[in-house]
Length: 603
Image 1 (cartoon, one colour):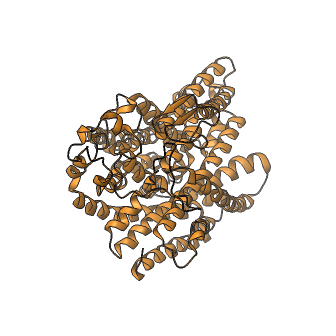
Image 2: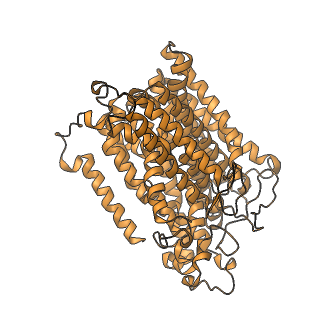
Image 3: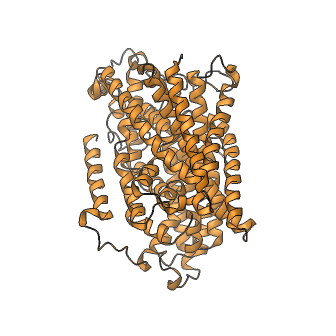
């Protein structure tokens, strides 16, 4: 690929700008509260955009584009089932607990509600999760740079991947080290507008070239163009999961587990300037989030529609996708699936093409968005598109690193290593933790090379960490009888159940190891995503049952100690000064009505 001076200039201006934000904010980082929580002074609308932009990293832009190409419009469930209801719930019900308790992190809330050992389990597992999530974003960015040949002729090809990892790490380290969470938030807002500016024309041009939505429907199997079609059985839809696994695994456990308990996004709401603003942050974020499938999933569908006739068997004309058998439609990948512009996956270190256990080529769906940019964008606009992609990767990294340095400093270092340090010392430790988080993320970036869809890898991480944690939060916030011993035991049991389930199951066509089956293969799932959903269900269920049983046989805390931490013992937020249309509940209902409409349109 040959980039013009205009393309390079656009990317250079962006990198200078993000580092400049860090330098400009450095003088305002006087206390640890400024560095870790932005002084709790950011307006609601800025926090709202940062709330979704922190999640708008590689996992969303590349991962959702990849899942759109691999699974189809059913991927919209990650938004319309797996995000919006939980965002409404966290805004209306959970933010009063987080903001009102003055907890500086999610693990610290667990200490206030339960005890120190429960906080410790969550702090360590969350720190590990953020490192892996940041590493996945770093891997995706390096893979993009290598695949597009941005440094071809400048750096020897065999070193491009490694140099790209280090370059992305250095840039993110620069502006987080200087400006802390405030720098991350304002860069995330910038990244949000970049994504919209770059992807809206990409979708418009792509749709014109494939004949619009009707052209996609005539080209692809029906299971890829209807979100609820074939959900009665795992073998009759492209995702490889039935409606029970989808609704319970994604719509309830993974969705609520992520949006309600993941400090990465909760931290953005905690930076708001008041409790009222904090409650509105997830609700404001839910509105643009609802329409993001049209910006990030649709390009994946377009990518496999452009030349998909080349991958279709001759006996199955693309004008009649309904003629495809259910079994053929349900394959997550393989020789009969439409691949369009999607290239075969190659090992980034050796350059060799990869094959599954049946000898079929493994297609690199993570490149759906990049190949779309190269296929449709001319000089200048291509630079904008690439800048938006690179911005999303760094935003994902920065979001995880800011969450990591906060949890490390407050919930691990201050809690167990140095309890009597000065505020200046903890500010210094936060910067040291930023460097450490970046170094650990580099290692995680190389582990991510084992997946051909980073969304699969991320959902696996969430099923191991967030899914069991959600049961702990649900019982802790709404059942005052829940005890610290119950929460701790349940959290350990739920996490262990997730690991055991993953170790005993394996997706079809995958090798035992990172994808599962590392204990013994007792069951095969149609896809990685189906395995992830059921891993989350097992983790949540085991945690819930164990927590209830242990809580019933252990002594609960006095009710006076739980005021502000349990729903039934917490005064309701004062809303008398708000008009009916300004109340969070009203905004939440309006969001849910729009959500139902979108599900009906694409059912």
